[in-house]
Every structure is written in C-alpha cells, then in structure tokens.
Amino acid sequence: MTVTHGPRSRPRRAVPSREGAGRDRFPGPGSTAATLGRVLALGLIIGVALWAAAPLVSARQWIGVGIVAGVTALAVYVYMSPRRLPAKYLLPATLLLVAFQVFPVLYTMSLALTNIGDGHLGTKQEAIAAIEASSVRREPGSAEYRLTVAETDGSLVFLLADPARRRAYAGTEDGLREIRGASFGAGGRVTAAEGYTVLTPAQAAARGEEVSSFAVPVDGGAIRAQGLTRAYEGRATLGYDVGCDCVSDGTTTWRADDERGRFTAPDGTSLAQGWKVGVGWANLTAALTNPKINTHFLGVFVWNLCYAIAVVGLTAALGVAAALVLHHPRMRGVRIYRTLVVLPYAMPAFAMLLVWRDMFNTDFGLVNRMLGVDVDWLGTPLTARVSVLLVQVWLGFPYMFLVATGALQTIPAEYLEAAQVDGATAWQRFRVVTLPLLLLALAPLLVSSFAFNFNNFNGVFLVTAGGPFPSDNPTVGATDLLITYTFRLAFGEQGAQYGLASAISIYVYLIVAVISIIGFRRTRAFKEVS
Image (tube, rainbow, N blue to C red; front, side):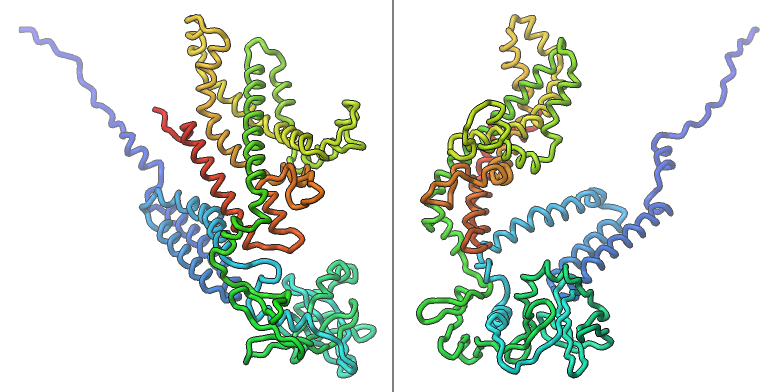
C-alpha cells in the first residue's frame, strides 16, 4: 500500500499584535518618562503660582491670593492624575478664556455700577489726603530741604536733605522717613541712597508735572517741590474734621456726600477730589436719559450700521470677484497678481490709516494732485464718509480674497462640469453652485467682520477723528461710530468718566451681540454639515 505524505507543516512565527506594539512604543503612566514629566509640570505650576502670588501678598490682596491658590490646586489635581486626559487639554484654554474674555466683561460691568473717573479713583481716605496735600501753602519760617528726585520700583520719591542737621529723608505718598548711609554732594543734596535710583536732571525735568504735583504728607501739611532742587514744608489750608465728616478752610465747610462720593458745600459746589462709590444703575440710565447722549444716538447708530454693512458687503464682493478672476484656468501670472492683491493686508493698518489721512489732505494730498481736483475730502459729511469707506475697503478686501481663494480650490470641478453639461450659463453656475459653497466658508467671517467694523475705532478715529463737526455741536461728527462717540463723551473736556464709558460700552456690546446672533442664525454658520 502506498502512503502519500503531505507537505511538512512549518511552525508559524509569532507576530506581535498592534496593540502590544503600541504599548511598547509609548511610555505607560507609571514609566520613568511619565513620572519625570509630571515632576517638571508640578515644578512649573508651583513656580508660576509663587511668581503670581508674591506681589498679591505684598499688596495684601487676599482675594487674589485665594484665586491663585485655587487655580494652582486645580492644575495640580488635573496634571498629577494619570486620568482625566480631556481636562489636561481643556484647562489651559478655559483659564485663558476666563482671564482674557470673561473677567474683562465682568470687570467692565462692575465699573458701570460705580462713579469711577477723574477725581473718583481712590478711597475716601486717599481723597482726604489728596485734598489736604493740594491745599498746602508755604508759610514764613517753614522748613526747607535740598531736593533730589529719585524713584523706587517705578514710584516717585523725594530724597530730602536737611543741611543744618546733616540728615537725609525719603518722602513718599505714605509719609516721611529718615534714611541712613546716604551720600551728600555739592550744596548738601543727596547724590545716592541705597534702594533708590537718582534721576538725572533731564529725567526729572521730563517728569516735571508729576514732580510739581507730588506731595509728601506730614503732620498738619505736606512737603512739596519748589523747582527740581528745593522743597518746602507747608501747611494745609483745608483740613478734615472727623466729628462732622467734613472739610473746612475756616470759612466754608464741605460735607461728605457718600452717595455721590464727594465733599459738597451748602451752595452746591463740590471739591474736585472725590472717591469711588457705587451708584447702582445711574450710569446705565444716564446713557438713555442724558440729552447729551441720546439726542444724537439714533443718527450715529444708523450711520454706524450702514458703515459696517457697506464695508462688509464691498470687501466681500471685491474679494470674491478678484478670487474668481485669478482662479480662472486661462489666467496667467496668477502668483504675481495674488501677491499684489495681498499687499494691503500685509501693511500695518495703523500706519496705513495715517497715510490715507494725509493723502486726502485738501492742500497737499496725493488724491487731489493725481485727480487734478480741489476737493475737501475730510471737510464735508458726504466726502468724509466716502473716504472712510474707501480706506476700510482697501484694507479689508485682501482678507476676503484670501479666504475666497482657498474656498474656491475646495469646490469639486465635477459640480461645475455637471452644471455645464445640463446647460447652465456661467452666471447660473456661479449663483447655484459656486456661491452657496463659498458662503459655507465666508458666512462666519462676514458676521465676525461686521462685528469688527461696527466697533472699528481706529478705522474712523485715525482718519477723520469722527469729523467733520457742525459749528454748533462739537460732540458728534458726521463719521462718528458709536465707539468714537462714546469715547468723546466719556473722555472729553469734562474729564474721564470710566463708569459712564463702561455703561455705554455695555449697550454697544449688546447691540453687536444681538446683530451677530441674528446674522449667525440667518446664515446658519454654525450648522453642522454631514
């Protein structure tokens, strides 16, 4: 009988699974590399926390210290744990969002509920000290000092020398204290002192206004500068009385008004220096009821809306048109043309706005010289509005061109070929195929561009400063946007009013937010496409 033997089977070599290979390739949570990474991360977190907490502790800002401690504990908990992988990526972005978006908005809202502004920046005690210091007058026989202007940690300091007793003192906003080991030069002035940086005459002269207004409080008065080399100790003509909670000069009495944060006399006059207090909804209601604000609000708002819509529409139309022309297959020299089109976008907008302002100058501007005309471009309402629109379109359309160029390259050629086979004209192919696909990429940018141009402070202020202004009303100009109008009202001749500015900025924010939400819903920019 014949026996047929089959082929001898060979033993198969074991092939490691991909799962096992991946485990060998990447260090596990208990490996040396992972442990070293956690230690380095822990050291970095603690180092940043100590750096942030040190100035807060020295300033006794315990709320800030508590926030730093809480954030540090959260970061240590997230990054020291082998799990919670999504939190490791989300935590930095969340902290930055809170620090640079949420906190500024909340802080602005809190300022809108106060009277903060010029003369209302500090506490009541600081206001009293400032009132007494500003009323210091020199008396016969008052003490004199040799003055040396210095600084420490960026703060101004008076180094005062008493030639008669050969002593040196350091005068700050907190008071006067004697210093040891100071060096004296010609005339008995202090030339050097440990911990202080002596300013040169040129540096001291550059801060002359600050030096002349600086006062070192002492009992019954203050020490003030007389030039840059001498100082005197004067007596305050205004004094604060705790019993009546008032300030008096012996003739007139100004009583504290804690609701308004100022000292007020019986005749209604108030001292210039006040203090910060809460005023509730006063700023928010004033923005709607104050005739200086709401009289021209509607007109400014209409122009602001037209300006933003016109800029967005013109930049988008011009950018898409340029992208379509340069996207044509028969077009030659595309790279050169694209480079020339993008050049305005590469220029610093701040500098270009100032250049355009000079180009529109009536007497020596380039625009009038090239066109051979004598038009006051920035002097009449119509031409000024056309000018700011033209400048912003020139600056903004390259961005739309870049986005449209990228979007056109993602549109499949088969769609256009199919439409052409079906007999669609060039305009029909653009309207039915190209434009809807372009809007998928452009719609969010159009809404965000509208929000930007609605608050485009530089685009108007650096070209026209909001003007031209009518002769009978210098507070509102023909090209004013809400943001420039608010700036002029809040920081005009009456002084800075940060609380009022914050209140108006909240209204501007709400207007932009509502319009943007409507725009996003209408364009379906955030709709997910499967």
